[in-house]
Image: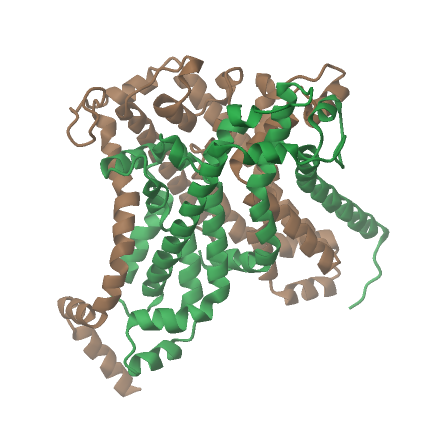
Amino acid sequence: MIQRKTFGERIFDGFNILFMLFLIVVTLYPLIYVLASSLSSAGDLARHRGILLWPVGNINLAAYGRVFSDPQLMVGYRNTLIILVGGVTLNILLTSVGAYVLSRKDVFWNKTFSKLIVVTMIFQGGFIPLFLVVNAIGLLDSLWALILPTAISTFNLIIMRTSFAAIPESLSESAELDGAGHMTILFKIVLPLSKAVIAVMVLFYGVFHWNSWLHAALFIRNENLFPLQLVLRNILILNQMTDDMMAGDIHGANVMEIQMTIQYAMIIIATVPILCLYPFLQKYFAKGVMIGSVKG
Amino acid sequence: MANKKNLGIQYKKLSLGYRIKRDATKNYTLYLMMLPVLVYYIIFHYGPMVGLQTAFRDTRIITDMWTAPWVGFANFRAFFNHPWFGMILGNTIRISLWTIIAGFPAPIILALLINELKSKKFSRVTQTITYLPHFISLVVVAGMVITFVSAGSGGIISQAWAFITRTEPQYMLNNPSMFLPIFVTTNIWRTIGWGSIVYLAALTGIDPTLYEAAEIDGASRMRKLWHVTLPGILPTITIMLILRVGQVMTVGFEEILLLQNQLNFHVSEVIPTHMFNRNFGNTDWGITREHTGYTSAIAMFNSVINFAIIIVANFICRKVGETSLW
């Protein structure tokens, strides 16, 4: 049925589009500003006021050079990569195994398991008791402390279970008749059929590990084990620059000005990997959240 | 038919013990697979619940959560008698309420507006872009906020604010009255897009024949929104609200911790940041370190209140409406 739009509706549609454009600008502009600033020359940037869409002064990568000359940042990158690879592998393994068992209908204790697991979403001890547990099992100052306590996210487990439960039972039944064990069914039948949900899980867990800083602030004292976000926090929030960054000729710009461009460059370096992956996975994760929200 | 009924009776006759035993022999590989998952939940989710008993111990000298001496409710009394107790509780409730009042409806409104967009392509682009902040780390977000509200060259927000109020640009986070607006705005910026996904999913689940029927009855767009769309997503709104109010005492504490400084401390210190600062915080701010028994008492206080709120919210929703968490 095609209706003629009334005048009021046209006005509404117009304003709606304007509002969305405003939202898009508000979301993207901070990143554009930071990117432009990170490529600006330090002295010119310090004198600049107001809107910035393009680097001021000569476009240069000096700030990035300084950032990459910092050994602490490189250590942070290395640790985050270790946590990312180890953590996500463990995440996917445990979550899919748990989701597989919970998605089976004929398991007597499944209801009890589900209840035990969902209760932890509603009643949480908080980070101090978690610290006590991590301390008690001797994980303080170890990268395991950033991998094991977050091995499964209950929310992701539920998403995965829902997705596994949607796979026709006849597939696993026929495999069982052929004598396949549960591990074989999981790895040879269920997981290959669940590529989309696994992509979502890798993204969710990966982004979590990449962005997480609180657990590191709680569990890690040794600077050589600091993940990227903790290094970032020290520089962006607590303003602790290392000597390596400030070394060398600073071309008449003062220390404060150099610091600013370094901070901008660090924001870009810490965000770009996610921003690059993001558009490719976007169609998957919307689906993932929807699966979870339908059943929750 | 008769046959089926008989089978049903026969099945019921099997004793519970027999069923458990048969299930154990049939599914033991599944239970073996489940074992590491259960171990994980027991250690890292039930472990902390057990760890909460530290709240009743004096861990100042013996720090171990099993052998430190019992002190009854002394840690709770210490927290309730803390000179900052009123301030911290007030901040927690104020920041939490404002985040809910301003932040909870925002993604719902966004989802409804996206739903009204005629161009599917534009709607997809808007969604993709507004989801983006969810993937940026809190440290980076806080770093950007600190820069944008600074008095220096990067302080585009403070410059705009100074222009509007005809004052000199200042570092806005140092101004206690600006902390709450900055925090709430940042929070909305970060969560509005991602939060709208569940509502958009709920919107696609609304039966299109309802809209057709409303159109035949001559309903305007506003009427359809009010009588079809909103009731359609009400269950989702209810569930999300219950979960949200269950986080009242937790607030957005990581974000607050990152935006907190010595000058806004008295308006930004909330219960979880108090816990963090008492055990791990910056002692330069005149914070005295406390033992983990003290912070465990606060953790318990917080968890119990969160839990109670979620129970009450769920109870109310079940009485008033049709949806509830359980």
